[in-house]
Length: 106
Image (cartoon, rainbow, N blue to C red):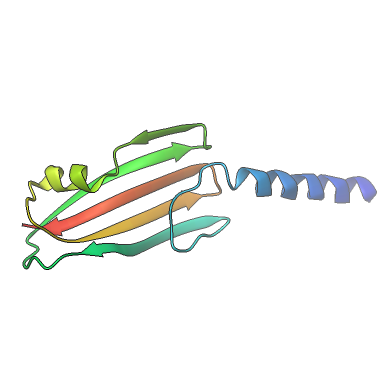
């Protein structure tokens, strides 16, 4: 019985340590799963007929790649006047994380 408790404690410890490996900016975070969309900024420009996006990912906190900038998102849709910007954060067990930026404008 003591060996079983040790194994469970070890497993929980590994999960706790691994959960912070691939982290992502988010207003809220879950240990097992996170999928949150939230606002970043808004301007005085009117109309948001176009939507552009950009993203970056992380795997195990070892490899991270991508361009999740507002500039890259605006260029992807040909936006020159930004109306507002949203973000989406997604992570799974700290193994995989994705940060995505959405730019709305004309």
